Image 1 (tube, rainbow, N blue to C red):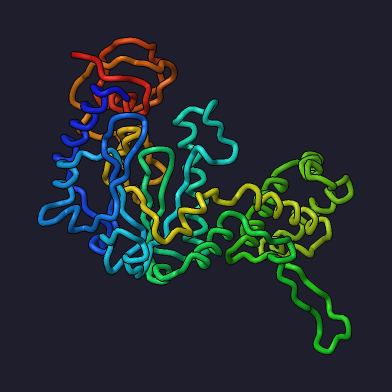
Image 2 (image 1 turned 90 degrees about the vertical axis):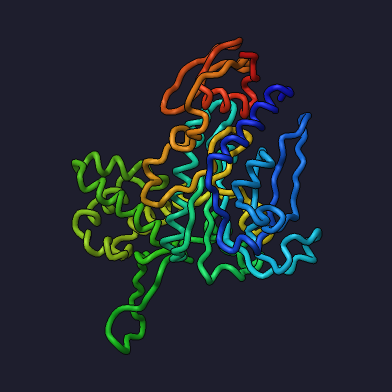
Length: 394
């Protein structure tokens, strides 16, 4: 980033903060604060070990941001007795939010060289929804804040009372569960003896749980398959079931009969209606582990001292707002539309595009050629922050 571009972005970031009213997180005075300023050269310098008093002092957080004009702003997941101490050992850890980070660049199946920015963000939202299914459905967490990071993904802050004092090892167990535990089909199947009292060899019934966990996820996939084949003609249904490895004509036909004749039992989780169903359920379990896990950035969740981006601040690598998203609004949230700062939407500016090509921004997709041109400031800031343009003279 050349000097003109850097100084322009720094000044406009400051203008944005002067128009903003940004509040800190809960227990803001117990957290460490840090920021990265707009510095010359390719490197970055983190200013950290600051307390709320250092940052806000007698003024507001927005006043501090307007004065410093930082490129990135962070606060700690950890809460401390002395957050401004220069060493972690001196801060006096008290508690930490449980934080999850999803980064589009690191998701399975995403190729940053081939996939567009918008496509990666869409894929990341799918992963976010899977993560929330774990956090809300399996763990029952209620105090969750979902935040678009302003860059390549999403953060989820969990502040339920029961998680605040978890240590690294306990957080690691949550990570393992969410990211795909090392478990077998037998670990999720419930086995119970059925039959009359006093039988020498009671019958064993195997069921998939329907009330949560990886077993319930497997059961959900099983019932989706059952509903699918019930809606097909018999020959097509059997052909569909034969798509599974090691499921031949006989097993497929038996599974189809079970789907049509024992639907209520299957819906209740009973997979012992036929051995063919057990075989398919086991295959679905293996697929569920591969497809339903949440590919979180594990070190972020286990780190009780982690610094995380401040909601409401600007991301220096995109010029977008680090945006909290209400749970009910998540399905309709479009980062490249809803996180564009209004500050930069009033007029056009001159830029020099240095990396032309596809641009997806504010609901549009277009090709921008290299060279000098006038663009709306929001787009110009976006391209400059992402290293695809430089500020040109007006």
